[in-house]
Amino acid sequence: MPVLDPNPQNGQKKMLLVFGTFFAIFVIIAVIATIASP
Image 1: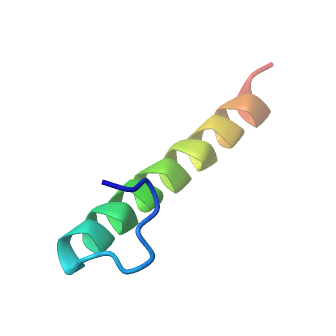
Image 2: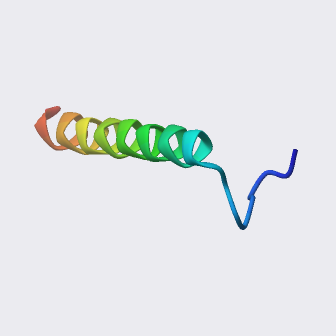
C-alpha cells in the first residue's frame, strides 16, 4: 500500500481528512499552550 495514493478510495480519503483535522487541532492547542505558558 503506497503512502500517498494518487487516487485514494472514499474511505481512505475520509480517514485522511479526519487525521488532518485532528493534527490541525493538536497544532492549534500546542500553539495556544506555548503562548499561554509563562
